[in-house]
Image 1 (cartoon, helix red, strand yellow):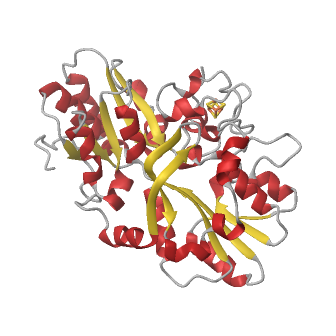
Image 2 (cartoon, rainbow, N blue to C red; image 1 turned 90 degrees about the vertical axis):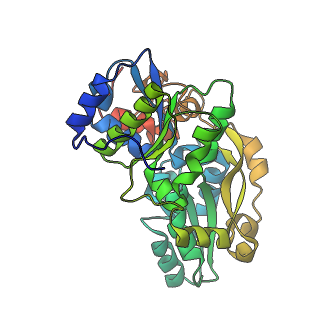
Image 3 (cartoon, helix red, strand yellow; image 1 turned 120 degrees about the horizontal axis):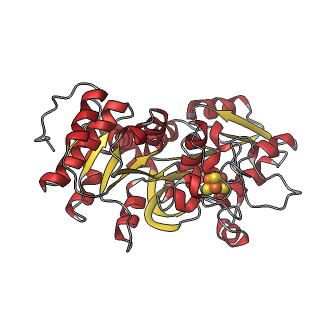
Length: 369
Ligand code: SF4
């Protein structure tokens, strides 16, 4: 885990100079998993600053984008019930479900139709809303990856009011990358792994990319120099033929991750096969509330049939290429709707809704065709 490469470059300018000086032979495709990484890369204009043979490919790091349509639809239906208050993180409000135009297609539209929908910034707010409204069913629709799930389990481990339930769309990041690498055409030669996920779960989770697939891998934080340091590492690994997992976010990412958060996750959640919007079911890639929390699990509490809902509609809106954007198969501006029918003001798919969606990031950063 200790990097053999010197950490002598101090600034982004130094790191870029070192990257340009590498005698790379041919194209190198580097996947950056995290939506936060993609935002930093795009906002900083890094793609334009790199040698043209280095390709940075945004990966499956947007939990809102992969939140299954049946969960979004279920949340909308619950929000329309007169006895329910639906609370969720703000970036879920505009995520579209595939429903007829006559029906509310997002939580924002459900609220406009009279539903009690409240955006929250933290699970603690959901808890407060439930305690303040004991006569109402309060449903916390929580979508996110490991970093978002950690505070949710902290809430679940405490005293829960009887009127609070959780519709959990939590996903693990690494199984999506594993699925890509196990497919015939992974589409990348090296990986920049998400630092904040590794902070919680430990860097070891990403060892399979090196051990099983032999690809250079480095863990990065969100700052430009951290991403460039990870990029320099994977390029040098490839060039020098010594592949390893390089932790380039050592100030934050520690071996084993956050043991308290992981113990809480183990205690409160089960790892289950989970549906990813537009992608399908990925084995052992989702979290579900454990049996002890069955009374607070929304699907059971309301007798919802998500399997039936999954068959009801396609996973992505017609014409939306979000699933292939999430998997790094196409860039956002290769979608026929990008910037035409689909913009942040009129989003067609979830990748244009979420702050971590590549389409929204690219459009907001001024990337035009
Ligand atoms: Fe989907 Fe819009 Fe992105 Fe196209 S531009 S992939 S329609 S979110």
